[in-house]
Length: 406
Image (cartoon, rainbow, N blue to C red):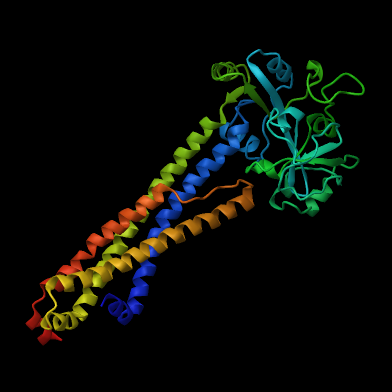
């Protein structure tokens, strides 16, 4: 009987399933995407225990250093490199210098130690740079080992990764070339799109010296205090948690700014969470309206089919049978819509994650989670209860009146 009813009103049934699916998918997509962004950004910040820079915007320091969003940052004095390197509370310190691009990929000057994340990373191809004219590339940079490239000044190519625009070509640093000697493993962060070179080569390219007195100059620390140019940011690896907080407190004064990227991300999460809460509330209201509309539609369909149910009663079918047939029909439609909405929401969140990855290089892992499953189960339960309304209407309808009204 349920299958016969659904076949008879298949047009309305499909409309109900689609409406419920779209309403549920909105809430599922918002929740899953917000969780994926939190996890992806937190994972990207793991390689940056403590950032030190010149006073300014903490958010911009994190966005530029961790997520490689192009922006001019004030420089912190280079002499701070040696001061931090000599600090017993510091296990490692590395400069990060920005400003150049190659075919739209950012060129980042740093040290071998940070390129290998202080021994945690090993190139999947080739080796780490060992000379000023060598470079290693992230997993998503489409260059070959042994290929030689020329950097350009500015950020014009960032919107076209893998392509050299006319503006980028016009700002080339003629006479400067890097040979690609290695490729890093995938990190799932915007650094997968970066080209890492010795910080000395970035300084020399811009006429700032190389931070050393010796000729030929060594690569990496220790730098000569009187010859170290300023840098946009320093990445500091403290030896312990107490050391991290002590260093953060010390370098939050005296012309410098120190921060944990996680504390800035928490502030951003709070903002994103507020937006998510508003969207979830709007989605909940949307679900309520859709379910109410579905309920009214079910009541209308039951009233149109009351003669059929009256005939069943007249032939001896008990009231409970009619109630069960009516309830199962409405509950089946709502359940099908909720399940379809769950799958659609996950698919939409996955597609949006791919768009974000293509634009920023930040890889987001969208996986089914208990919050989305629990929301779907809650909606199925609520929908099943609502489905009792048209079923009770059919159960209470007098047989004689329904037959006369048919």
